Amino acid sequence: QVQLAESGGGSVQAGGSLRLSCAVSGSVYRSVCMAWFRQAPGQERERVALIDSDGSDGYGDFVKGRFTISRDTAKTTLYLQMNSLTPEDSAMYYCAADPNYCFELLEEDDFMYWGQGTQVAVSS
Image (cartoon, rainbow, N blue to C red; front, side, top):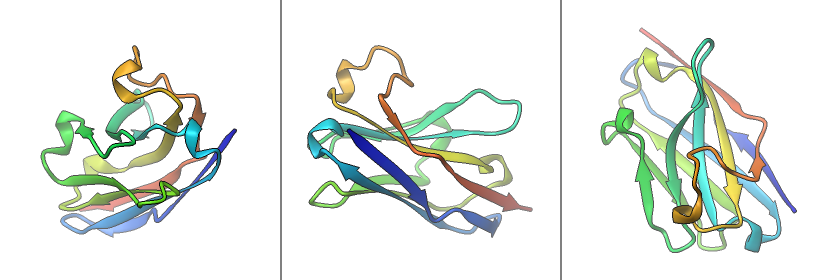
């Protein structure tokens, strides 16, 4: 069993930065692959970034080198550093975890555990 709790969302101006955190509780063995997703009103949920237990990571094309995903050594916290934010980045951001390795996930959003989300609003 894994519980995820996001924090760090808020309102920022375009060009600003924000650092999201996801606190992980429960079995670390059930959170091998972790990821950040986002969903804006009227839009489909999309994967922002993912990271495996060995630190290997991957990003959505829309990130354009602006975001960085990371985990602490104990794997108890997931982070998403977001720089050069634009209004198009405004969305609800979700943390997700799965006991499988990232390459084993057949679907982009096939994660077993999900957080409740944290809102990000970027103004012009």
